[in-house]
Image 1 (cartoon, rainbow, N blue to C red):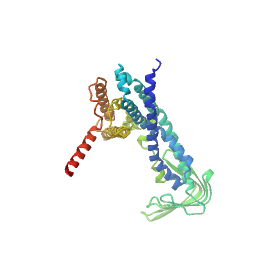
Image 2: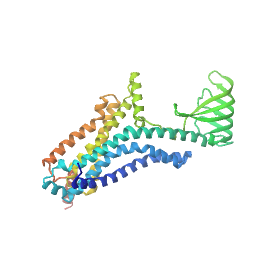
Image 3: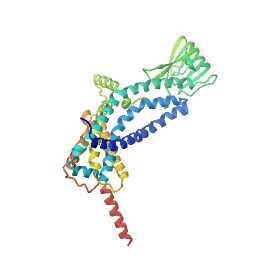
Image 4: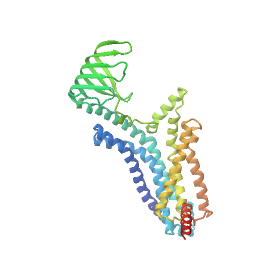
Length: 393
């Protein structure tokens, strides 16, 4: 069915603030993560291009969270503007019900819900896999960049490396002298003709493969020493802490990785409740897009004494309430105190009940349209001001 003029008008009023909110919220999350990535660029020589690529790979995860928030802001701002200009009153006086007015909002929220699901199930796994590849490349580049020719390099914890000559583009070192004190009970000194740095994806490390050398080791507990000659010797090097801090937690793993982790934990009879909570978190959070849209439709009909800034405050209160319920449910699920699906659905259950109740009352004119959502706050301010004036007189 072709959209009517009213539908297009409401969509335009809602979509513009929705896009603005999406941009602002996403930018806020990007800035928070960019500060950690900039540390790599400043202190470890990671290029700006690599930093930009990492931010691009992380972006789907950010957008998945900001879509529900942006829909709430857009609908609340759009309907609030139309309510202030009496356009909603005129439409309802003409026989147009709130159910009909909310049809384009519901359509918009369903589209946003589909995008959020796509981000969680398709875009995020792709971004995470690309991010992991980029991190390994950065780790390898850091290991090479952190080693200088003809200098005793001690920037890697427990290791001191001297290289007579380095070819960074090939990750090769020549004339190597290495002191390994990572195990205080078995310190070692290694001399090798050459070596090459190889990323170790399985153990999230870099392997320094040494060729044609000797290892001088000491057993401090047995007060003995040993000398070993080798043709090939692999030395595992962990990335610096700044790079290690970027390793993905369960909330950064792709959906297939989470499923494999959960299945493996179940087979070992050691359920990973944190991973299970994260998996169901991805299915439940997009539902908030629909709930927020319908809830904002109802709240937008209410008057506000503080203008649009008060509506922003209402959005923050809703975000905070949803976040508190989500964290509470996640805590219950992670501790194994409640079924994971039920625990992670707690905010959706609570907001679904609130949304249905408020929407039904508003559609049937059972609510008080003379009071706004934060009128209790303004009443408190007025009473406080009145008492202050009475005390002054």
